[in-house]
Length: 73
Image 1 (cartoon, rainbow, N blue to C red):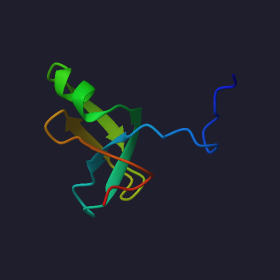
Image 2 (tube, helix red, strand yellow):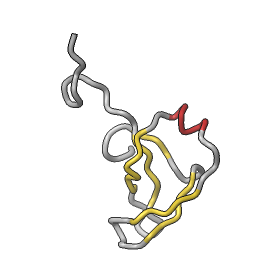
Image 3 (cartoon, rainbow, N blue to C red):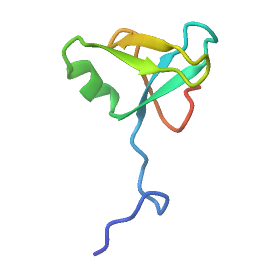
Image 4 (cartoon, helix red, strand yellow):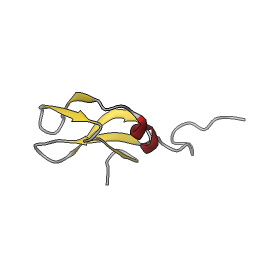
């Protein structure tokens, strides 16, 4: 039995996004997680470079959202 590779029928893991405060565009954090796992995480705060405005933004569990694909709908 072979394990499907990504792009070969395997479901992609949802990703965490936050929002650029300047442009309103989504920022991909590079973290893959499902909603239930995100909900179980303790509160946190972090910083991320924004490719849309070039600034560094603070983000947290409260500002994070989980979505499928490369851009949230």
